[in-house]
Length: 115
Length: 111
Image 1 (cartoon, rainbow over the protein chains, first blue to last red):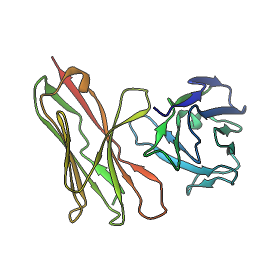
Image 2 (image 1 turned 180 degrees about the vertical axis):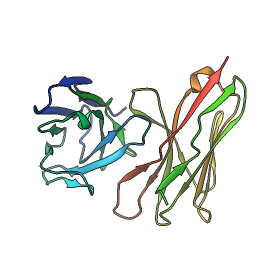
Image 3 (image 1 turned 90 degrees about the vertical axis):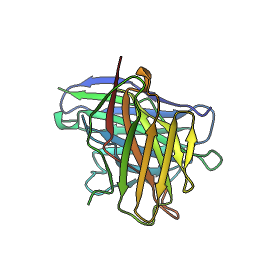
């Protein structure tokens, strides 16, 4: 079945540094990538939606200059958390959709801890 | 009103019990409905889609009532491996491909 590989699975970084998270669709072309964030005991909250070759559309309240999303190819999308702060510590997860596949395929998530 | 609202839980049930999860959604234009399960610190995985006529997959039965904007999931003969958080998920209508997740209901099945 469709697989999205997300890396890293876990990262600890210092406050003020940047972290890049990658999601690759391994056996299909991800025309749309969704990026979510999930705080403990909370639901997944959509941060942004990106279509290949286009600028990402951010949800209200999500800073586009802080969370940089790149979807330059049909198999790779990245989320960069810039100038990370402890409050950015969360579980980040991507989800890909395709014109030919039904449903959404999730990456395995990245647990970010900013110290 | 939250876009997708679920029973707060948690549910603790013995093996073999029947357990029901309820969910309501606020956007009447929503077109597609799903139940996902999420294990601790893992990504959500699709359990089943929910169709207007109701659908069953083994021990799992999903129901949708569009008039009441209500979705349910019934698990019969629960197993230890059913322990997880169950997420009610709604997809927007038309060209809106966004998924909106409920907060989830934690189920623990005890031996």
